[in-house]
Every structure is written in C-alpha cells, then in structure tokens.
Image (cartoon, rainbow, N blue to C red):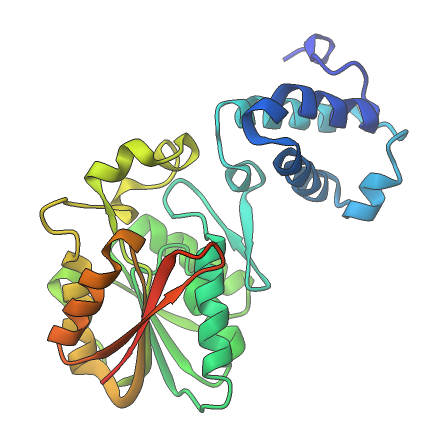
Length: 291
C-alpha cells in the first residue's frame, strides 16, 4: 500500500490516537480502544503507558505508521488484538497465540491464580493439564511450582506446536502429549496431586450469543460441544482423575456457567466432592474437587 493513501492525518502520535478513537469508539468503547492503543504502542514501538502519554507530539516513521493502519483495519473487522500483536500476557507469562489456540481469558487467569494461592503451602510434585491449547495454564503452574513435573495434553498438533514454543520461550520444562482426552490418555505415569482443565464447554446453541472476535478467530474445536452431550469432556476428565489423581489431590476445571449444577452433580456421581466458585464477574466459572 502507498503510505500516501493512509487515512491518518499525519504520523504524529496524537493524530494516530485520535483516529483510532474516531473509528473504533462506537464499536468497542473509548476505554477498550485506549487499552488497544497501549498494547499496540508497546508491541510496535516498545513504549509503555507513560511514554505514550508524554509523547503525543512525537512522530513515527512510515513503516510503523503502516503497521498501525493495518491494526486499525483489523480491529474494524473484529480481529482480536492478541492476534494482531501476536501474544497475550497470562499470569506474568508472555504467551504466543494464533487461530490454532484459544486466546487466554482473564477468567482462566483468575482460576490459575486461585490454584497457585490455594496450593502455595503444599509441595506439589506432579501436575496434569488436559486440553492445554496454548499451554498457558501448565506454563504458569510450572513457573509457580518449579520443582513439579508438569504434563500437558491436547488433541491438536498445531496447538501443541504453539504450546511447546511458549514453554521454551518462558523457560518452562513441560512434557507435552498429543491425544484425545475423550478416549482417555495412554502413557500417563503415576499419580498427580493437581489435575486442571479448561475443556470445550460452549453448547452449539450458544453460538448466537457469542461475539464475532471469538466466533471468527478462536478454533471451534476448543470451544464447542454438542447440545445433547455438553458434559462429554467432564465425564472423560472425571474418569482420568479417578485413575490418576492422588488421594489428597485437587481437581480444578473451568465450566460453563449455565451448567454449573449439572457439572457439579456429574463430579459427585464419579465420587468427588465438588465446590463451585464464581469469577470476578459474579458468574459460576470453576469447580474444585477432592475425593
């Protein structure tokens, strides 16, 4: 693209910020657009929030201006900001993302922080993450419990490739396995004091309620379950936990808020003592369970 055709009034920071708000505030809200700008200036130019606030009269070169142009166009098409900059921050870890993996959500980060706090005084030796996706959960756990042996499982080779790269980039030694959790996990050795999972749990009938940036860019394989069997992954996880969770171990699963009671009842049926927790939005978001 000829940079003379860019719609920015100039390559001055103030004008870039102004155009983003003019074009996007009606879609996302001014506060969210401000967050986008913070993330873009950090990713593209290495600027922190203070630098951005104090450099409004500074200009950037044409190549960087072009990057902001394409970011603006992408955001207008509801492309997630994490896909635009290529990463997401999760529990202090830099996590690469792509259309092959779910973008780590704040709700999941809240769950992992709860697990880390809850187990801070316990010497965890073995952790297992089922349906790992980008690897954000086992990486955060390995950073919090560096002496623990951490195993992570996913069905998608593309997701595991991203997860392995994330583990290397974050200095986390994790064993990754490709397998379908629904068919059990062959090759697991011994027992685990912690088993965690953020499995697919969105019912097909809930598609209409979802935002475009999720439907168009997150992998359906990691999101959806059939309406007539929405707890299929929790049944498989419960079976795995029955065999591989230590007697005093902890099972933690992210859940569909609409199925909290059903998921809790399922875990009780499999011999666990579940407790439902709400997230920062007040929605039922995860269950911890013991034997």
